[in-house]
Length: 183
Image (cartoon, rainbow, N blue to C red):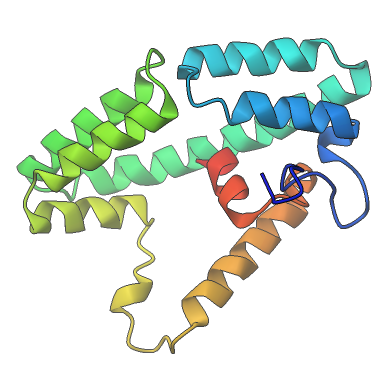
């Protein structure tokens, strides 16, 4: 929450609330999304139950929103599959373990992130670098000498802005929240 206890996606630049929800509904939805005690399955169920209690227009916007996210994820999965073949055997083994953790709906996103971090901290640096390439979709800003200081954050902000335009429901969300919804 922001210091004024409003979710950071309280209102878009156009003055609309996320998915056309009321201010109270946005807060309730935000509370559900930010509940770190929920497993991934519980979070999905709670989110769907919440949306199920809203009017038809919000439900339709939510469905479109989720479809766009799933389409983006499918595209990213295709890229990962292509890059998987280029990994070393050690990196493939770690990659498979990470993907299995991500498929586990019985843990929270916080636990998932913690387990992945522990796993990555235990492997050699070379393996981590290989896996970063798969995750980054080949965009290696830190290795590009042509980028000047600050250009990476400008580019990331431009990428987020472009995604917000193509997914209007993301408008008004912070960069971190956009990344969370798109990951």
